[in-house]
Image (cartoon, rainbow, N blue to C red):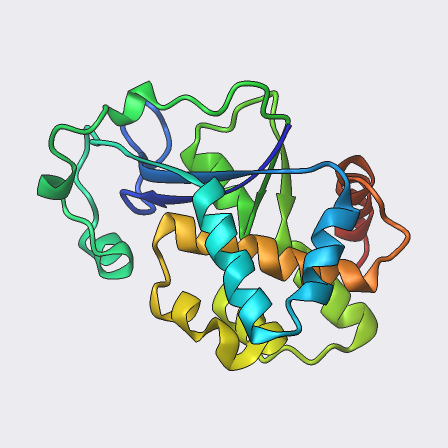
Length: 209
């Protein structure tokens, strides 16, 4: 099973026992293995009404859980996600986090960081929209100002997506942004039809200078 996801964490510092930062918020949305369904969203989203309707539908598909860490939250991380320790009192412990059953692929922006926060589960393969955006930009000269997630959303969707930008660094919002950016990036690789092929394509791109 394939899930787009985003994590918010305690920061960059490792937990002394776990060896990685702790997750304090995890959002996931299950994706179909058929990439055509993602490509189809690009077509219907040319109209603002359909775009907003589709975004609302994606939010309803999402699952979000907050966790109480056993280490301090770095103030610099709080500046990003606006969560402090008292916001997480009574939440499940970070050590109890479990990924959705059957997850085989995770899809995220800067996926290696989310993978690290989740403890680098050996059975999960990572697909990174940041890597794909960088490599496709180099190959096709797309002309992104940079490869940050919000920049890519605005490049592809303009002012229609402003409400998503205004709510950046909320895990579910960023997960939705990952999905709609991936939908646009897929336009440049029409021959890729499944996540298995997409993952192998990413592995090939990583080897290219």
